[in-house]
Image (cartoon, rainbow, N blue to C red):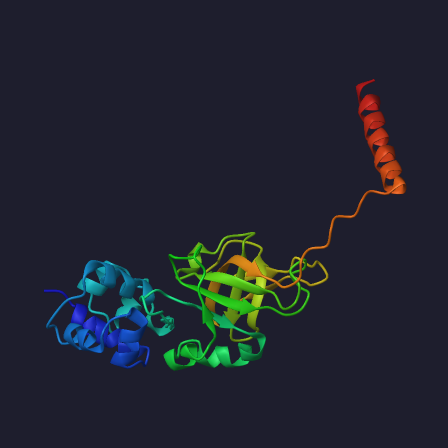
Length: 258
């Protein structure tokens, strides 16, 4: 006999959402949630996988373990850090891309897990992103030049932070710094978190601890109303400088062979 019904009920209550809110998150009917929690039906494989990914637990644990307050002490999973991701869907049950403008940044820290808050965000869709969960964030400042302030970065939700890789860019939502778009200097460390660096070298790198992180979105695209400037034509002076540098390099190679 599986433990799906009790585990679903525990996880839902642990993250403090109603059956209707959970149904909205999963794109199913509220009556189905009641049936699953009362053990009158079981979720099909695809839905079970979606629930497991949503709560950051394995499908095996969701089906077979007894997930409760003691379970987190005897497992690599930790229910005290469950992350609730609220999404919206269109009329064809496809996930939207919600936009978080700069003016909504402060409110997002409190409302990112609230389905009602997320529903109020502007939303759109892009045909190139038909699989996965995406969100768009308006960035400000010059720390990630050449992306200008006001650009919109579209990110894909990172469920497991161990997938954060060095040199890729991410939108990191943290308690201390809010919403930032940065490049990571090294792979995710469970003990230390992530070290963030700016493409604009004027800004110093810094660390964000694991406990401080709320959400992570891997950058997939950006939207900007500013077009890149045309490349500057080389001047006579720059050509002379390039030739002089080339001659200097050639001379040094010749000298080392003598």
